[in-house]
Length: 274
Ligand SMILES: [Fe+2]
Ligand SMILES: [Fe+2]
Image (cartoon, rainbow, N blue to C red; front, side):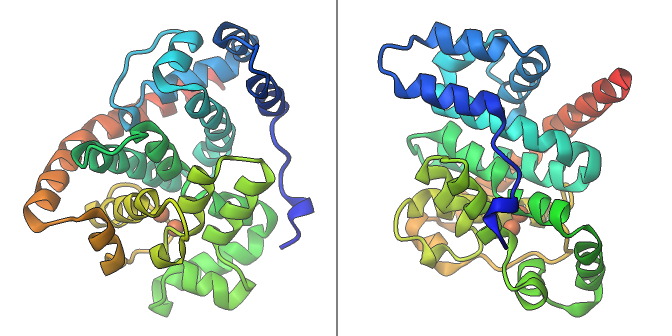
């Protein structure tokens, strides 16, 4: 796929990046820039308060920046633009992504990993490539999606076969194109092939496990009905064990009730707007 035809980075993210590159820029200045876009601010605050970030109850963009960090807010700006498309065109995928964010946050916290919020962001964005492929190859992708039900192959296997790339690779390309940090790009690119990640393996393993768990839970719809096997390499990297996994699954089941309510709330506010 020609990366030149990928959607361009929202202008505000470019501005935010150049502000963030300047050491003299204060958080308040960056917050002011984001706050100047009302719709975007509202979406970021909704995302920052979503179950995938553990319900922080942040009320302002500058608080979100202090609490979650500039990098997380930058990726929230991106996620919110992408999710705008996702919510409208593929509700199942939006819920799958939100659920994966929730799962990744639980796993990262249980393992006491640093950067829990960024891992949740990587999980939120892990299937972003599907949105892009769909935008670019609408009819072809619909045929492909219809085939997953009967082919017995996973979606990414079918993508490889039919379009010569897959959503993980496309998502990674997009991330690089948008100059997202490697700690987001690597887990997105390798969430179906943890062993392929040459760095950020722990984050990649968390996103992979989160994807498997959320598919197993039946929450949302990622495009195919199959629950992929958990890759042993991910299990080893995380030092996972059965009792810990059982605790994670139990917590996930509880949090998904909140996630469902959050998703319904967003849909109803979006409907009210239109
Ligand atoms: Fe995927
Ligand atoms: Fe997924």
